[in-house]
Image (tube, rainbow, N blue to C red):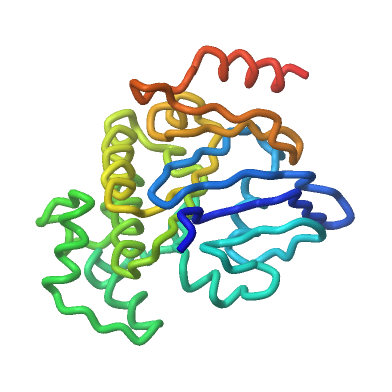
Amino acid sequence: MTNVALKAIDLEVIRGGKTVLSGMSFEVKQGEVFALLGGNGAGKSTTLLTFMGLLCPNAGVAEVLGHSVADAPEAVRSRIAYLPENSALYEHLTALENLTYFLSLSHERPDPGTLNAALDEVSLPVDSRYKSLKSYSKGMRQKVAIALALLRDTPVLLLDEPTSGLDPAAVEDFHRIIERLAEKGVTILMVTHDLYGACQVASRVGLLRFGQLVDKFEADASGSVDIERIRDLFLQQKAS
């Protein structure tokens, strides 16, 4: 079995007559955290929608665990979980009720112990689990959404601007959760405009500009990505 979870080869996607992704090529290994960094309109969300099988490439290849998004979209969708910038959970339900409801849509009936174990994994306080999400911060809602992804037991997690709107403490907490998931073998592709967050949590960072992957950076032996170099290139691109 290949150890490549996500693969793009000369990927091109056209939306509304506009080329949104052009010549994109990269691989993400199983258990790796890969961040795509770019500003508004760079093609970040289109990349995720393509790997979710919701957009079909106009040229090139996109694969999830060896399955083509063009030829086997259902197989692709069964292997991924997606966390949008704003989770689609129901605010009038509790954390446990949200998990129960969304899992029931795929005919799953996990017991309360299983649900609580997933919430333990994301460090959601026990006393919060019986309160409606109306009282939750965005960081707490993110934890419930990640718990749902864990319960679906998918090998790939796609994150769209996961730390947007979170306070610094919530960002650090979120990064710890992502690192734990990667240690367990979950492959994570996150798209973000958060330079420092991307460099802190990802083992590799790709720089996306107008639909093209212009550079990739790998962590050194200490696990650090060259944030100064990425920052300079990122700021140069935003200024151009």
